[in-house]
Image (tube, rainbow, N blue to C red; front, top):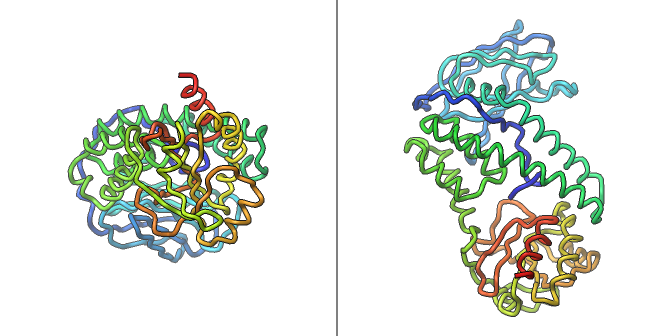
Length: 378
């Protein structure tokens, strides 16, 4: 899904110079020796991420130095911060924990300005950031503006118009990022960092077809790694929603506990939006002014919405239906949905024709009206 209401990944610059990196044997032990300056904090908190796993370690600082040893199967994205320190400048420092011996100099005045030396994946990572700082900063600027506005307001078309403009700018900048990343990944198909770049681009909305092509061009050792298997799973999931795919059947109960067959709704209309949401999802509820406007305008001509709530309990969903007054088909998940409907993030939608074939997806904000206007003018 495109846009800022997805999880925000802040570490996505683009590399302009393409240095061919060699394949790595990534499994083994690591030893990080470090120095700490500018603070008397005596405990560091390391959080290491790998597919389906989070390792948290504390490391003591003695005489402004520390040593952190351990084992990794492949490079692990890591953040480090001072334990219990709430100083506004001491957020986190991000790097990769990888096999080998290298150094980490912690800047206690601003931990984000710390430095890792002597590790290949980190060298690629920080070069990647530095070379493209202007583009990354611009993406973050629009992203933070979007999130700040989204968090402070209730749904309304005037606000949604502003959010749509911001979202459009983020999408446009991400497209620039994706095109540059294609070149980077193709030139560095043997290096673990390329797999990381691809994984982040997928999370930020790269289309599944492009992601699949780039993944298939990676070295087989990367494809078969734990991170590779995880990325492949996400790509395969996204390919289900490609234009031209047909959705699977589904029957769920509405607010009156009456069964509502999704195929009945689809066959009775020219176009149907399948919308996944939940009563507790603020970005979902902020989409409803757009959905209501589209429904009022195009329903008489053959447009409908089949909205699937992902709520675990009926009462919050029923209250939301009463408060929001949604005029289309509303059903609630039975927690045993087919895999197609088990999405990773909401809001999520696909637009299908009267045969249940997907013709568009992620029609957020003004994108829905734009697509429907094209379809009904044909």
